[in-house]
Every structure is written in C-alpha cells, then in structure tokens.
Amino acid sequence: MIRIEHIGIAVKDLKDAIEIYEQMLNTPCYKTELVASENVDTAFFRVGESKIELLEATSSDSAIAKYIDKKGQGIHHIAFEVENIEAEMKRLEALGFQLLNEKPKQGADNKLVCFVHPKTTNGVLIELCQEIVP
Ligand code: ZN
Image (cartoon, rainbow, N blue to C red; front, side, top):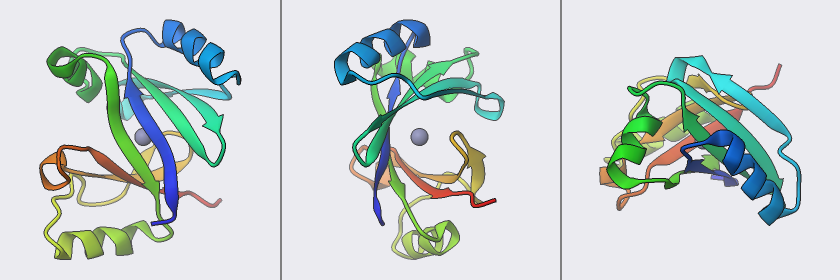
C-alpha cells in the first residue's frame, strides 16, 4: 500500500464539523460531495500527503448513522491508497481478510474503493482506494 490517503471521521453535523476542522487544520475544506449510493455527505481537507474526510449521514439507515448510534462521533475508517485495487483485494482475501465489497465501487473524491471488515483488522474499518484516472 502506498500511503494513508485519508482518515474518515463520522460527524453529526457536517456544517459545524467543517468549521471546527477548518479552524483546527488552518486550511479550508477543498471539496464537499454527496455520495447518494452511501447516503452520506462528505467534506475533504488536505493535510500534507493525507486528507481528512468528514462524513455525515443523510438518512437514518446509512452506515454512518448506525455507527454514530453505536459508538458516537469519531474516527470511522482509515483509507490506504493502492496502485491496483483488484490485485490488492485478491491478495488480502487470500490472506483471510474479509472484504465488504465483492468488486471495487465508486467512492467519494474520484476513487474506486473497497472496505475490509474490522473484525479481521483488530477493530479498524479499512478502506482501500485507487484514484480513477480518466
Ligand atoms: Zn473514506
């Protein structure tokens, strides 16, 4: 894996959270994006070679809403950039990691993504992501 691409943080109110993170990081949010397929609204910040992704649920059955109900706001996932997501999925599956997606799917910020179940990664939801090159 190449680097930590971003850290995903589940928040209750995206607008409030953007303000807080803009102040803390001292950098403006460079992008907001609604991911309708996941029922989440997202906001991104650049921090050096990594990013912060804030995630707010847009419906009560979204994974982010369920996460906040169970655990409260906080770090939701860590995303690693990979060069070839399908090869990386095969490699991890062969090692016994449980993938949450059979195929890479379209994620926020122009990425193909696949999630790895936290029960096989010591409790951390892992996202693999590969930049979509047009
Ligand atoms: Zn993410």
